[in-house]
Image 1: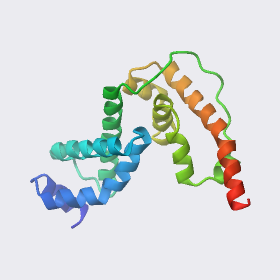
Image 2: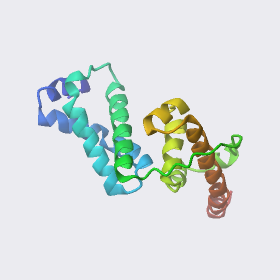
Image 3: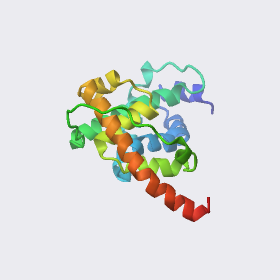
Image 4: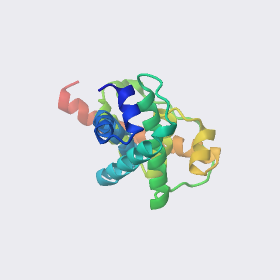
Amino acid sequence: MDESKAVLKCKQNDRKAQRFLFDAYSNGMLMICLRYVKNQADAEEVMLSGFYKFYDSIDRFVYGGTGSIGGWLKKIMINEALMFLRRQQQFHFVEEGYAEELPVDNHTLDHLSAGEIFKLIRNLPSGYRTVFNLFVVEGYSHKEIAEALCITEGTSKSQLNKARGMLQKMLPKEYCSYERQTGR
């Protein structure tokens, strides 16, 4: 079954088509949820809720070719993760000014795998992690982040700067252990 047929069948509540799309996208969508929600079980709950919303609103979806389902699902998953964090009151934002943007040592990042970088980001406090993911990974502007999280643009910038600072403090420690393990 191809995606366009699966979408048409999902609009008719075809369970096999729903399962087809779930199987095709669930791993990637879970990874997106895990970027925002630290706990595996909570991330799975968010993902399932996102798929429920996807199927519930599929009548409004217009298949636009390869990538259109993934893009729509990604937006749904991010919104579900943000709603989950709001319900759990896991945002801890402190309104304050921000310092100049910290430089990132790309040489160090080149030696870390995507999994190692993902692990570092997951160790950030939820507010820092959420703003970092929205800005760096998803490409949101500070204005969009502020609107999505009901914070000011200054708070978004401050949280991003603090996230970068924490990551920079974590990097040398992680990088040193990487060098010892690999001999690089």
